[in-house]
Amino acid sequence: MLVSWAGDAGRQCRGEEGERVMRRYRGSAFRQLAGIGIVLALLLLSPISPAAAAGPSDVIRGFYGVLLDTMQHAQQLGARGRYQKLEPVIFRTFDVPYMAKLSIGPGWNALTPEQKKQAAHAYGRYIAATYASRFDGYSGERLDVTGEQKIKRGTMVQSRIVKSDGEPVSINYMVHDNAVGYQIRDVYVTGTISELATKRSEFATILRTNGIDGLIASLNKKADDLRG
Image 1: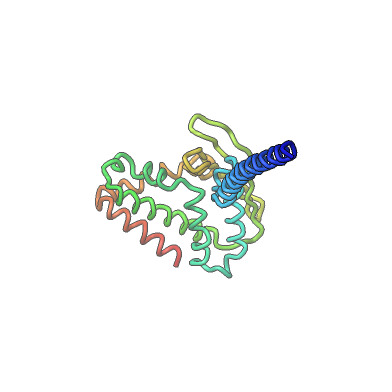
Image 2 (image 1 turned 60 degrees about the horizontal axis):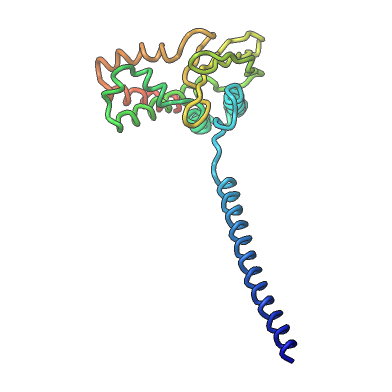
């Protein structure tokens, strides 16, 4: 009887111990699975910037895709609709604060944070309105990325816009990798003329005459006039 009881007690102890071990195992396994689930959820919910996920040429192809679609629906969209479609793409694809800084020149460092923010925003609006105004229709044009070349400060992406009559126009994009991924920092019209250099020359006169507030007002007015 004692042996039987001892055996039963031993089995009971082993059963209780086993149950405790299983509970600990299940708890540990649950915590591990929960941890994995949280990580997966964060990965799925975290937004991935298109610029961060693509190479320099891919950024231009993506931009051209939106630009071509805007051209093809230009009449339905109208000037304001084209602007609204392009503005968020411009701010995502172009490094607007960097471009504003270089276009304004040394005086940028003396600006307040709020002035820098306003200047960059006005500059981005102006770029978007310019594209919306220039690309106001479609008659069979092609927008092609033709290659890229690594250079000291980034990558030069070569492209061309082929007009409906077959005439190609070279447009090159200086793309650099910054905190958010690859973004455009300069545009070379006909392949060689820097937009930043041109804008810096234009802005210098306004800055000398009317200061940064005058430049911001001028850019916003031009954007408003172009978008209609």
